[in-house]
Structures are given as structure tokens and as C-alpha cells.
Length: 159
View (cartoon, rainbow, N blue to C red):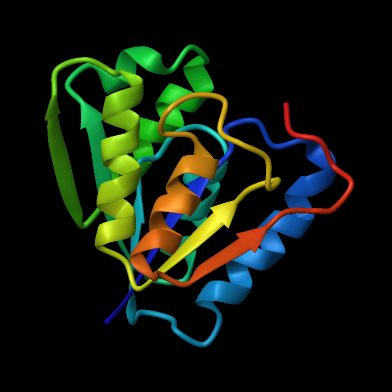
């Protein structure tokens, strides 16, 4: 079974959605039912990836960074989506951090990079805005020698 992980921005501008969705679908096309998808289910790229993975019949593994992770969801619709996707997961990995910190987010991203065959990065190519951001996880995965597929629509600025 092929394992694909995700890292990506929470804020995806509307003009990039179709491009990112198409890029993600291309990663799953032809592999229906034979993939494991790893995601922390953060708002934005992680939840979009999980939706598409499940649509293609992948087994979803959720990596929960901390005990209070749900408290970080400020929008009710994003929390509801997180709970729905978590409930549809085949497997859950709960990291031992009690609180959602940059270190917990970095550890979750590193876990995903450590346990996938390919990392899909919804990334504008710019540095992370805090430890554990997309740029940090891409750099970590590349240091491991993991193949990284970057999906972003050129000319679009992230939120």
C-alpha cells in the first residue's frame, strides 16, 4: 500500500482552490483503494486532502498533535469538518503533547513525513510563519530524502 502524507497552508485563497484540488486528485488517480493518506486534519489543505483521499477510497490515518487540538479550531464549520473526517478515519495516532504548541505541530508534521512514501505540500514556497509550518515540514521531508510534490498556483498569495 502506498502512503501519502500532506502538509499545507490553512489559508488557501479561493482562486487557488481548483488548481490545488486538481493536483491532489492527480496524486490519487489510478490508485483507488490502495493508498493510505496521513493528515492532521487542520483547516485548509489538510482537510481538503482528507476529503479527496476518502473520495478515492484511501485509508485515512489522522495524526493528532496534542490533547487540546480541537480547541485550536475557531470556526465552527472547520471544527465540524475535523470531527467528521476524524470519525471516518481508519486509524488515529495521538501524539503525547498535552497542548497545541509549535513543537506539537512540528512533531505531527515530522511524524507524517517519517511515515509516508511521498509528501504532498500545498505550499507557496515561502518560509514557515512559525515552527512546524509547511516550509519546515517540506525541508524536513527533503532532508529525509522523501519525494515531495508541491502544489500551488503561481502568482497567488496565501492568507
